[in-house]
Image (cartoon, rainbow over all chains, first blue to last red):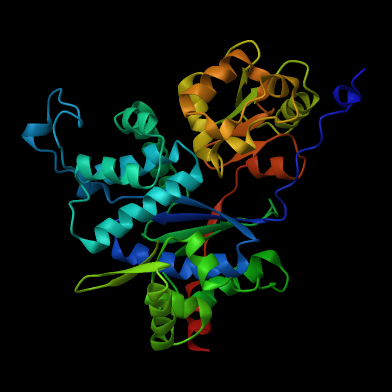
Length: 268
Length: 133
């Protein structure tokens, strides 16, 4: 007799400890999206125990209408290094088929490459290489990249954008637990305090802030950070943040990637 | 779009979830994984909605899973899919999903998230006031 078999299946643990759902509508390659994601990171660090995030890609469709004659016909991306503005979005959805976290890692890397602007992010070859760098299951990624499933997932995002009547990118739609309440659509990007206020209002209670993690733990979580983000998360000025980051660099814990426009810090 | 629910035979949680969907008049498609194996596309769709891939959807206390005695972290997606096709009971059940979210197992509070909700725009004035403060 095995008693374990007689036990009833336990009731699924409630996700009610995360009572808020966030639907974050972004164009992954838009600078405004990056700024908003910076704010969201701070929100996640402090109040991540209250909400789940789902990124919804809402690429401006008109930007995608640039099909060239070379691409018509039956050539797959793998045979020819095709470049097309819809490819990054499709690739992100293909990565997401391996789970939200894998998709998020991939999204971040795509954005990093786009910001650094040293490679063509719309190119098939670049997008495949990024998948390798973030340790995706490559067999699956390569077959998903050109698949109906990835295209369907992207269409599903566009459908959600329409369904929630999102007209401005970036936007965030908040849902709380109270199913009688409507979702709350916040169009555009606002400062941190606004989102903090909305969270508190939707929860109907005072927010409990989580202790800020150490810088090392922060890099475990988000492998790439800007000086401004670090300053924002720790509420310190940028000089001080930079000094802390340089210390980590000397300890070989992070590396600095600089271009004319931006400085990024990456966990080593 | 409707809710898709993946159920297993003789699973009380699956029955409860179906009963709830019926009572709340929510359109759904039921797929019984024990009689009709998941397709690869369906499996990937489920994975894409999970937080961290496989951990959440595998019933680690099921006999199917215990008898296999494997480390799922070591498997490729394809290998895991092949296993699930032959051992559908290593999946947790029910699995409900729509285009927004996934729910694994039955929980009477959480399943209410599948009730359709409208969206309203946040009052911009209120936001601006806050920004001035």
